[in-house]
Amino acid sequence: MKMNIYFRPLPSLLLAGLMILLGSSVLNLRAEDNWARFRGPNGTGHSNAKNIPTKWDSGSIVWKTKLKGVGQSSPVNWGDKLFLTSSSDDGRERYVYCVNAKDGKILWQKTIPCENPEKNHKMNSWATPSCVTDGERVIAFFGPAGLHCFDLDGKEMWSQDMGDFPGNWGVAASPVIFENLVIQNTDCTGPSDLVALDKNTGKQVWKVKREDKPRGGWSTPILIDSGKRAELVLNGEFGVRAYDPKTGKELWFCKSFNGRGAPVPDFANGLVYTVNGKPGDTYAVEPGGSGDVTDSKMKWHAKRPRGRDLPSPSVVGDYLVVVNMLGEVTCYDAKTGETVSSQKLIEKGGHFAAAPLEVNGLLYIQSEDGGETFVIKPGKKIEIVSTNSLGTDKKEIFRATLAPIGGRLYARSHTTLYSIGN
Image (cartoon, rainbow, N blue to C red; front, side, top):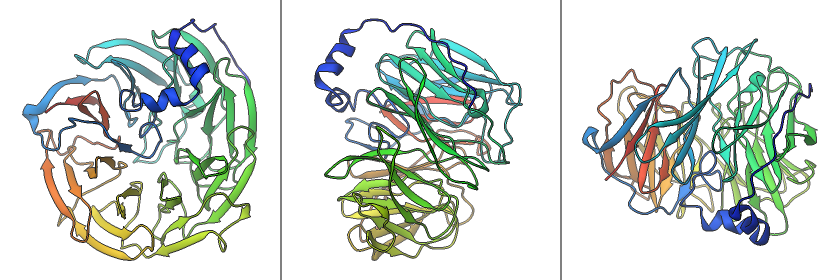
């Protein structure tokens, strides 16, 4: 890996002192104030936020901001600052934005050049990974355009060349922060790694080999407590793996039923819930094991209906909910894997790629086509609570995940960020 690092000293902040004293509990206490990484505090798309709208239309748009270029990253925030990315149409420029959550004004924008853009799948973009922030720094990943760290006022702190990303698929994995580390999945078509850098300097702390011939680098790791240790759980082409987040040591592996491995797993009831990406059984794995746990720790697996599974699975109460790319919702008993109910959201057509958002027992499922969003209540009979439109053209594509921040809901299309209020 080519090392190309620049760094600046961090400002002294009271919040940093509190974090040192209290550890990660500070982030947990502020979880609903700050949706600080892809899919929220735990990376699994669950929120207890209050006053998030369940019904809306074009009149509910508080503001919308057009962004330069195109992208599929989801908004994250710290306080009133929202962070997201986009790129030029040819991928030779990548952009990091800071947007004021109150009025949608762009507070700052950074441009990052890329001499040799990676090839992309037609459903991907050159700005798909979401940023991560800890209240002092915001970090953005752009594949061959590198990993970049700024302070919250937009001053560059360090920049790291992450190497080449061969293949025709592009990247989508978002960075995550664990203690003093920023961890990045660098899967691509070819030898791939999981890499941890010092979040203060950008210097490499550890790197472990992932796969020899995966198909892409799309899945973002989640951090879980297995009951006896912290585990970094990451889906992939051949199955789901867990690593020691401090050292990168592989802890266990569970073989999947098919390839791709793009959807991010969920963690609930002491189990990791996973879908493949390509058609194949969904399955539940007990963490805490060692080595190949396919036979010993897979608690159940269940058939999936036709179609691909790009949206991530979500556990809501007693149910595991999985939505395929056609908008077919299936509820499973989360403990046994028994199919409980199913419902098609759109009778004809429909395209669904974004990971769902769960807020207080309701699941928000957004369509690619114009951002139409279905709010459902899972159960033995699936209840469609509302069907919501932003009044946009059906050709406007929405693949980013919805974000509940400060009592509002944020939706992002390829070109525009929307703030939705009650």
